[in-house]
Image: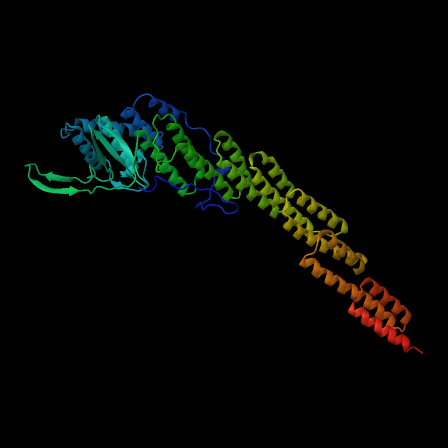
Length: 493
């Protein structure tokens, strides 16, 4: 029976665990955060004494989800117990009665094995059963005959053990011949003659854990939760987990096994999985509200990572739609529930995105200077790393240089960029930009020189080129222009 245990689903940042269908509760509403009152009532019944078999039957039907028809199905269980008690074939010894009960439920109640049919009430509707539902029914009927029975759980299976004196007997309730597996069953006719035998091999479970009848019944909740979550119905699993946690809250000797989900941890898993389903549905703000509500009622360290992941995804969405003010509000409102490292990561994510957005939209010198100051502040405040700040700063400086060139010419732009390199240091992009700016300034000077030279205004041409060389000493183009104008002057009549 493979639906006893199920994996916890939880989010990673920007990449979330696969959930199958990602459907939150219908209408986008939140499931309640209180267990049903009778969950605690049932827990109290067994807090100081063993449960009666009738009480176990009522709890099993409730755990199965039976509501209006509980009386009808309780009558069926009571009737089965009475029929067993009245049977002339019922052996007098506990071992014999235990084997008789297994044969009885397979002959009279259980019809077809179905891996996911974990509800006790459904057994009486269509005869379908799995290892949990059949084991629960068996334990109830065994208790009705005064036989002490409990459950056993493995990684993916459940069955029953009987305690008869000093002997412990396994019962595989999914098999009509599963009483004390490993022993041979002989069959005789009415005259006592041997007609055949059946043999069910014993299963050597590496790991097994004994569980109480109440813990066995709680597996009905676990299986129903697994079935709901496999269909993406995460909101509906939360009330079941609440009821299971409340039902098991007063146990004096709780089982400790990796196969038996701790009810509190299991509840946290269900609460978180519902939150994940909201995020996968694109409802990050609802997921954060859910974390606030459920996390306050059922605190756990894992809520911090959930909030971090949900807020990360919300900020990414707000960044993509350029809603930075909303992003800062969302982040600052939850600063108190984030670890310092996680807050700093999200703060950097948002600051980086906003500064990238601002720098890409620089249109004026004032825009550039404001953005440059914001980057400097972010680096000083350790919001941006030095490497990232240098990358942004270079982009802004190049934009500012282009604006200066368009508005005031290449001489002004080149002087600005040279001063920026002195202030912030060199890098390959700035060096390349300097080469381009010098080339453009050279072309600008050369074109002025050419206008005068071609107009035979050699004195003006000489002045222009000398001023240019004073600005750009050693420039080959300007040195060539100087030679040409000096030659022209020497040849002038």
